[in-house]
Image (cartoon, rainbow over all chains, first blue to last red; front, side, top):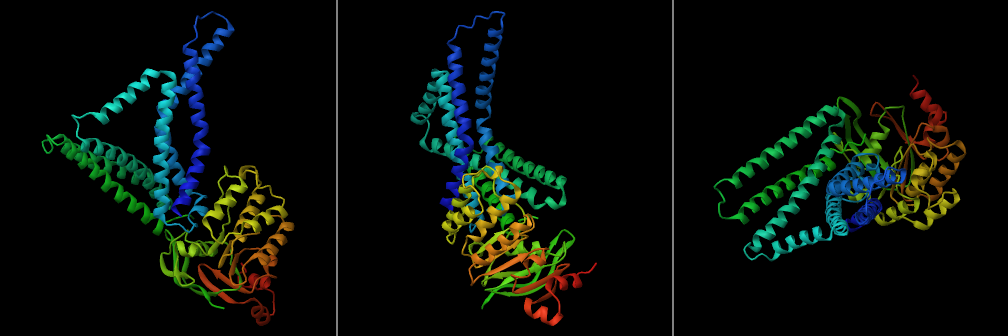
Length: 254
Length: 232
C-alpha cells in the first residue's frame, strides 16, 4: 500500500509542480534573452512596455528562486493537513492503510520534491548565468573531493541536512494534527499549543547548539554533527509517535 | 447469517456533549438496516466510529470480529454525508484511485453505472454539481464488493427522481452476504428496501428489530412509527 500511496503523491506533485517548473524555466530563458538585448531606454510606449515585461519576468524568476524551497515545504504540510484532517480525510482515513504509511509516503514525496526543485533551480540559474551554476557545482565537487575533510564529516553533514528537512516536515504535520485534535477547544488553544511546541523544539536545539559550540567537541567535527543528527533523529521519532497517536486515537473529523 | 458488527458500551463525547452513551448493539450480515433517529441522535457518530474516522471515548466496536483498523477498512465501503473527492481530480482519476487501494473494486461496474448516469469520466470534479458529485461517490461506494456498506444520508442531496435510481442501485449492486446501513431522515423513501430498523435517540438505542415484525407488532409503517416515537 505504501507504494500506491507514493504513486498518488507523485501524481499530485507532477500536476502541481510541473507548471511551476515550466514557468520558472521559461522565465529563466527570458531573463537570459533580455540580458542580451541592448536596453537603450527611449521615452516611448514600446520602451515602457519592454521595461515592464523585463521587470515582471525578472521578478517571477527571482521570486521563484527565493521561495522554491519554502514552497515544497509549505505545499507538503498543507497537503498533509488537507488530506488527513479536512473533508478529504473522509477519503484518506478510510483507506486500508496505516498512519505510518500515510506519513512515510508524504515524507518521501516531500523529500523528492525538494531535491527535484533544487535541480530545477540549478538549471534555471545555469540558463541565466552559466558561471554561477558552475561555481555552485564546483564548490559542491570540491567539498566531496576535499581530502582535508574526513568522509565521516561529509556523510554526517548530508545526514544532518536530510534529518533537518524531515524534522521540519514532521513539525508541520504535528502542528496540523494538534490543531485538528484540539479543534473543538478553539483556535486559541491550537495557537498556544503550536507556540509551546515551537518554543520547546527551539529551546532544546539551542541547548544542543551551545553544547556543540563549547569545549565538548573541540577537535571532533563529526561528533559535533552527529550530536545534532541524534537530536534531530530523536525529535523526528517523538514527533512521528505523537502524529501516529493523534491519527490513531484522537482523529477528530466531526 | 453471522454477526458482523458488535458495539459494547460504546460511548463518544465531543467535549462535554455526549453523542453516544453506552450503546450495546449487534448487527448481522446479509441485511439492509435503516439507522433512524432525529437530528443529533448520534447516527453519524456511530457510522464514523464504524469506519474509523472517530475513536470511542469508551467501550468497544468490532466489525467481523476485528477492532477498527486497516483490516476493517478494507471490508467497509463508506459514503459520507459530504463530498470529499479533491477538486483537481477527474472522475477517471478517482476510479483508478479506488481500484488501487481496494482489491474488491469493480472498475467495469463503476464505468457502467457512470455511463447510465450520463457522467463523463473525463470531467473534473470541480466542474460537477453537488448532486452529480454525490452520485459519483455513490457509484464508487457501490462498485465495491464490500462486507459492510455505510451510507450516511445517501439520498438527501439528490432530486426525488434520482432517489429511486439510487435506492435501486443500492439494492441491485450490494453483495447479498454483506450488510448495508442506511442513515436517513427520508424514511418513506427507504421503507421499501430495509430489512431491519435501528432507532437511536440522545445516543441511546430506542428500537431495534425486523422491519416487518415492527410493522405487524405496532400496526403501522416504519415512517409512522418514527413519527410516533420521536414526536416533539
